[in-house]
Length: 388
Ligand SMILES: *[C@@H]1O[C@H](CO)[C@@H](O)[C@H](O)[C@H]1NC(C)=O
Ligand SMILES: *[C@@H]1O[C@H](CO)[C@@H](O)[C@H](O)[C@H]1NC(C)=O
Ligand SMILES: *[C@@H]1O[C@H](CO)[C@@H](O)[C@H](O)[C@H]1NC(C)=O
Ligand SMILES: *[C@@H]1O[C@H](CO)[C@@H](O)[C@H](O)[C@H]1NC(C)=O
Ligand SMILES: *[C@@H]1O[C@H](CO)[C@@H](O)[C@H](O)[C@H]1NC(C)=O
Ligand SMILES: [Cu+2]
Image (cartoon, rainbow, N blue to C red; front, side, top):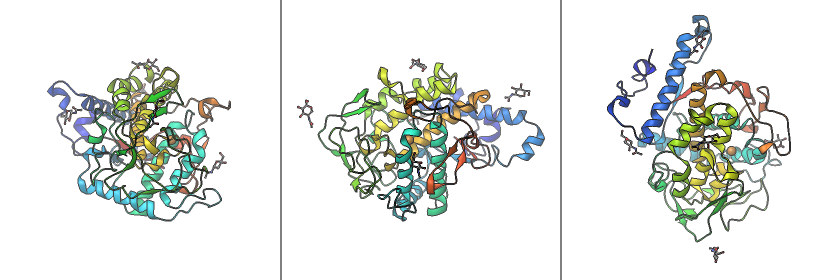
């Protein structure tokens, strides 16, 4: 049974696949891949026993739907942005001895990411930790700030030639503010010190849109933009603005359909190890990878591996990372529950392999979960969502 015939009308999508209508551009090819993932999940559901189906609380029909930011209505975009600003105003509930600089519920998320940076990147929990982190943030927006939608994602393949034209970064009232003001600097050094990113047209504070007055309380911890100074204290109070240096160079070089295809259906899709390494980057040969490149496109404070969640686009970017992981899992069902990698960044210092029984601890932001419980976005508890 084709998923498209069955479910697309339910999701409000056209019944006839546009695939039949001729050549596909990059965005549409990625959309086709998303549809293939849905078909694979539908086939798995068709194949399961009726007992299994009756026992599961979550299925393709009641799953929450995460969407591309550009497809949300203006009202939906404004509702999401208002909820983010609400989280940035709500007082922190973190222990001040843990994160003295954390002043808001939004900061509580940033603080946990800063604190755990060296054990959640280049590790076996990278994909699942960030998946659960985004879920916890989505839950906070809904439960603490009245948001009624689900986590949107930033579609990397759109507007790569000029990210300032993207509905995510265009500086309008329905964006996350735009480029920073121009500050002369000598670019950024990304990819663990291996990849030089020339400066763009920004570098300073954003000049328009919803986050123009946003005061960031934490970081930078490990700034990569020339001239940007780190905070005197890793989790201390260090008020500063949201800076950006939108990088078309980074977007056109690495946010490509070829790289998406490599990790989802190509050579880098053959194991979870290859998948996660290629997604994060082969830094020593100058290749940033989709995940690192997405952070690099934002530039400014968002380029800092530790404090990157200070830029609210972090959560749309990691929505997209998780969408690519979800597609890979659906297209590799036999390997979808597997893990590879250790507990430490690039296994330095050396550590044991990550296990499905390891705990994801997000501090005050969410109940702790076993990695094994967030491998499946249709697992039911805590996750029940799909991407379109
Ligand atoms: C791809 O094609 C769609 C129409 O099907 C269009 O809306 C979109 O702008 C195109 N994207 C690019 C990157 O050209
Ligand atoms: C359907 O079930 C059969 C038998 O258990 C199995 O070999 C096959 O891989 C399954 N297909 C899918 C798509 O899950
Ligand atoms: C950039 O680097 C060049 C050469 O090292 C130097 O002359 C120039 O002053 C630098 N510019 C800034 C803004 O730091
Ligand atoms: C695809 O990924 C593999 C495995 O990481 C890598 O060796 C290869 O160079 C990649 N292909 C392209 C075209 O980037
Ligand atoms: C902070 O990091 C330390 C050391 O890795 C860890 O023991 C602690 O649980 C972390 N706390 C939070 C809230 O992330
Ligand atoms: Cu991260």
